[in-house]
Length: 288
Image (tube, rainbow, N blue to C red; front, side):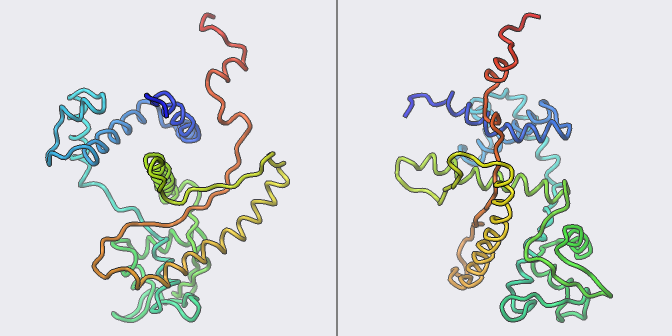
């Protein structure tokens, strides 16, 4: 292992950020705006994982992050200011999972029952479902989001589940939020396994790929195959979680866990460096 792997780490981060920055530029997010977010993350991380003093030591945070004390203060003040404005993101996926897994809202074999939108207190309804599994979400807002994603339909006040999983509308707030959550989950496992590699332990982290690549036609065939088999696999895992729910200690501390399956397609030059790109364009000097 390198004595100082910082350069290798930064090269890996640059590769990781390429699709993210492409997405940000496409939607008008500037470097300055991203820089502010990164300052927040650096301060958050030091306080959360490296500050055992029980209080916020701005000088220590400044030293560990490379920010000035003034920048650290600005980040903390901003976080305090917006803290009361933060809203819990809607979680329609949890509502659908409860609908399929809870016998109070589903029939034999996990078939979700058609639900009246509203019913007298204590009776089965969509409003009751959202109240049970949607925390403080609005039943009306949840229904509209699920309808936009094609997961439910509503006819004459009766709500019917059309899909087991939620597919957010393109670039909806839910989809953007999921983008961050998925990346966090995947990278949390990867970085955790990197730091535990010496001990030979870690969470499951594997991939399979075509050794020589594939044409667009075969990629299309693979996408169809994966959608079918991957969905079957995920639904099998969903049933496994439901079957093993009682194995959790009633008062035990719980952590979110699961599996994320994604079909990736990488363009040939996607991982080339800026140096490679400049050489390809024949640029060897900044002089005009």
